[in-house]
Length: 223
Ligand code: DC
Image (cartoon, rainbow, N blue to C red; front, side, top):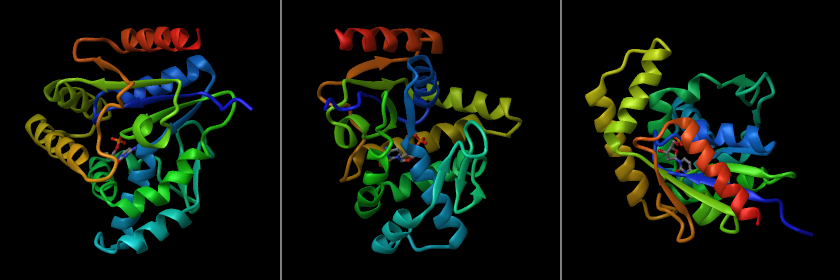
């Protein structure tokens, strides 16, 4: 039986992965895995429950046992053990916590199987840091999105301001640099392009241009 096709979209924070992946999944009628959301959820739970980041096995058990539902209460909704986490996981602090728990090997192992389960017909768009390198190495198309750190900080700033959330650009820039360093330098599944990934620098590309480029690569990959 042919495996369900997967398109992986990896890249650093603010590279546009989330938006591009959503658009692509909608265009192709594929399922979507926002793997960062899994790490963010665990990060929020660790914070809520005051769990110790050094207790790796305990954190892995928590990650395995969480009841996570995507889209149960409408598009984009995230429910964790019956509680609405949709807004919580999008906060800056959730991204920070996600990056910290994501550096723990036992946590990555615990979340691995959960991610594989998203591979359902007719296809999957998987967004993250290690989708093409570790989780779906047999993906039919691997994209690595980049953009300058200044551009990514500016995009994040504009998103926050549009949502009415106060933000300070130099702080966002510093936090992004710290997160990039942690995500690329960790020992397990560091952020890096797969050897067979297409690298797209989106610094001066619009969302529409990136989507069009990825769709044309997806069409080529079918030939
Ligand atoms: O994609 P994002 O910004 O929602 O991810 C938040 C953090 O989660 C990111 O800084 C590192 C971690 N993460 C990860 O380690 N592996 C993934 N596949 C996705 C996210």
